[in-house]
Amino acid sequence: MGHIRPLYRPGLRFLIPLVDKMIRVDQRVVTLTIPPQEVITRDNVPARVNAVVMFQVVDPLKAILAVENYALATSQIAQTTLRSLLGRADLDTLLAHREDLNSDLRTIIEKQTEPWGVEVRVVEIKDVEIPESMQRAMAREAEAERERRAKVINARGELQASEELREAAETLSKNPPRCSYGTCKRSWNWVPTRTRPWCSRCRSTSSRRS
Image (cartoon, rainbow, N blue to C red; front, side, top):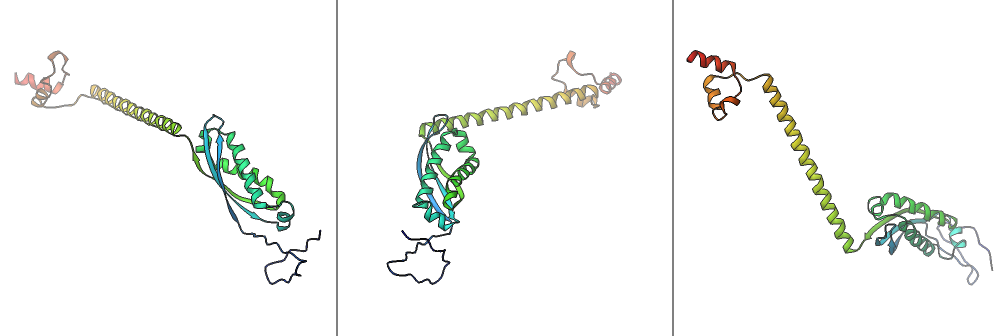
């Protein structure tokens, strides 16, 4: 059924009509959009996930001889790999650790496309859609977590304030302030006599005045 001639570089080429056939292979980076895939995560949450794959033909002979349509084959491998890998991950991993999943997807897909002379450059998960009921549940959980953190912060603030007041009270008890008799009398006029703190200066001043 014929033979393969050496690769032609870009330029002017002459072909024999009805005998020669030229196949052009684009060696630029190609962007391939993966349609939304229905996925059930490891924790039984249904989701719709789409992704984008960027690949490049690095060996045109392999791309033509090893597979009938390398672009379509790469797309099919990407779809099946996406469903398989995300089905083994839980929802939290899918939402919070996309970079790790992207790296794993790229490694698995490229292992399949390497014999075709296709190199996978980038795999990115674009959108993750989950049911509205799950979205509302996650929103309630996030709100509860924010309220819990706010209560913890308030409790820490009250504890710190109480410790500072205790330290101030201990300092004043060890070193009572000195004041004039009139100032001390006005300041502590509302305190019962038996519970008033003793001020040596005020006591001495009061004794001299009496």
